[in-house]
Image (cartoon, rainbow, N blue to C red; front, side, top):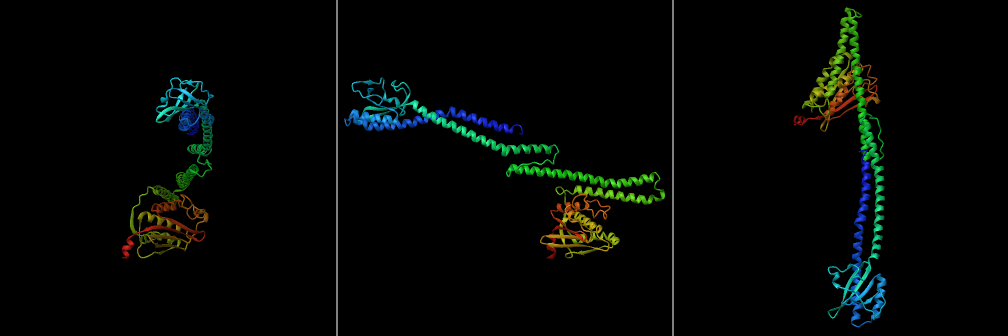
Length: 476
């Protein structure tokens, strides 16, 4: 397309010009000539008929003289630029506007036949050899007493008509030139408005195809081409961002795997070469075991996140009591909370509150949120778990009074492996995938999760679930 499209338009322009010239030179002249001949013949025949019924008719009824008719015909001849004759049926010319009146001189038209125009009202020829060039001739009969006394003939030279036809043909050529100029303007307009931006878009797609996703496409247009360019720019930026995220993801995974593996290898080598005495094996084997647990947790989180694809995730939806799930999940943290002297307060709406969701995945959401709240809460603090309902939605809140999240980090906490600077000291074993998993699960349910946090005060995570119709049955 880049090499041939513009060439095709230029070729089409020249083909248009050539065909326009061929049409004008081939068909237009004959069309103009025929049109002028018909119009002229109609005009001449009308005049001939009028003369036959007036001036010439009076000549045969002795109502007027030959001299008077001659003067009238000469005037009409000059006005019409034609030769007017009155001819007897025998072919004798009675009057001729192109010659002087001489009664003693007899002019005959050999083989005169008034039916020469049969089937039409005009004929183009030399009119029985009386002219040395082609003329348009019309014949109108002079009728008196129901008898044809003679004929009025009017003759118009074809040379004059050809000049008129050529003048009109010149106008056609000028019109063609104007059309070609206008077409050239359209071609230039197309070049600037369509082809040049299309070339830029083509070049940009080549850059993107070669891997240069940071190439910026500049097309200043508000039409569909501008919209296409904007979409390509957006697509490239999204792909570039995705590639950056992928590189960051690989780097984070490598880093999180490298640290425990390095630690495990170091301790095992130290035990093997005797740097660590046998009596200390138990202590360092415990450290190695903790590192392997960290690797296992990271691997499981990665597998979970990989499976939680919002387009392909299969949800096992069922109706269950969210209050009971919260109670059960909170109870599983009893030992952890006791170690930090943290209390979990439950503010649940009603004895039972049914939702329609995937029980196992929502339980994982609650586990991750409560686990985070405990990690980042101070000793001797409390965590508040609350449920509420509004219309057909149930809202679950997990609120702590811990270190909070910096304002600049609020939009980044859902990213994989992300850890804020303030959380790194408290979350030694965290993978940075917990909130990403939570976000994927809630999105898969078609619901939303929000966070409200103030640094140094605490954080509150609120997510919504679809309310079950079983609540209405219980109320009834």
